[in-house]
Length: 618
Figure (cartoon, rainbow, N blue to C red):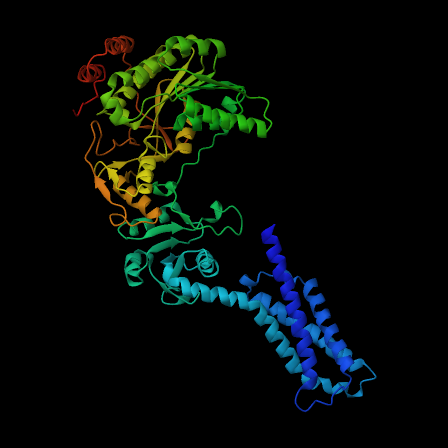
């Protein structure tokens, strides 16, 4: 309410200002040198000036002049004011010219021109005063602003420069543009130099002493963005970008955003068509284990959107499970959804009695098994717990899925199951063998597993860890300067899981084409720059050494020469391995080892005997 009052307060000031300007100029125009005797009737002069002022304000109001934002006044608004002022002054002159009682009125054409020009001048000055004041205030504050280079001397770049000049809260002081267009290089854009090409950006950063770079290119392809970011890899600047047209919330969206987490992917985001998935799950009963986790919670969201008949959330951790339950309950209430039954149950997959109770009571059509221990270093110290959840828990769900006639069960696995060097990877490989065994021996259920790499923003991911360390002032810690990882987003991972459930026919291990791996050191530097700091200057990066069970390089997940393609060009199937017919015996051995609570070393040794590809590094 206060802002509205201030706005109308300025409108009234402009009305009073226009009345005073037109009245004063009209009255004084009768007293130009040499015309003192013209129209001696003072009352007429006063009435004429007052009527012309009132008429001018009336015309201005009719053409919405008083709704102009004077802080944003430009050429168009100025032309509009000049034309309207000319029209009102001309009408005033014609009134005098046609009054028969004023024979000398024809001479009024002589003072008309200075009267017109003076009125236009003061009307414009009253409008541009705030604009000029804003510009001077920004000029005074430029020393406090961040020297900025804009990549892209086009329409998007114009948005950035306008924001920096007009918005007093904007912290950028643009010093130059950089572009690849040879027709622009060497010229000026918005009175600023245009340099180029972009691959020389580091040279221009040094020349202009820039502290920040804003990427402003409309509909910038992902691979081009990655290339630009690679040029900036060693530069001590913060990097931000203007949203592409497809990302904007509206036609006038002028946000300048930090480089998004998705931008660190060395590929375009994978967009998967889930139409057939929707048809598969619609009206069915779906059970999601580990529903409160990063992957599990996104699974519940995407499965919920397919409108299943019953959606069962099952997890041992009550807090996060309660949060996703409340999120979906709120959605049901707000969207008035009546055809989805949401069931939230607490328990563990290694509790066979609890799992059987759930499958017996609800008879799910589909199971997405995301419940697992995933933290590599923690599982090195607690291998028996990893076996209990990742192996025995998977065995319980798989066996009972067959017993109660589940149509499909999909295991959420990991790239660390490939030639594992840690307990977590070994137990997930063990879980895959269980899935493959039941895929061969079940007459009711189709089983499959999905492997993918690290998930951006998930619990345990390096990204949330790095962000917390940056917020705390550093240092950012990583285990090796050359360590690399494959990454994907949570929505991508979940869409992959759902798609693979669609393709599952029995025992497949599905893999996503994840593009090129990301160097974790580069990721740390990029996140530090996004926060507005300079790596190893404002925020230190410390290398702590590889942790137990941690690999320096991820295994190459995808080899298109040997892996089978699916209907989806981004999803492949790992070549089938011989099913371990002794897997049930191995599960029994693992269960006995867990029950005896043997030492960490003994449990790892047993795991090595059961999973031949597991190579302990400690």
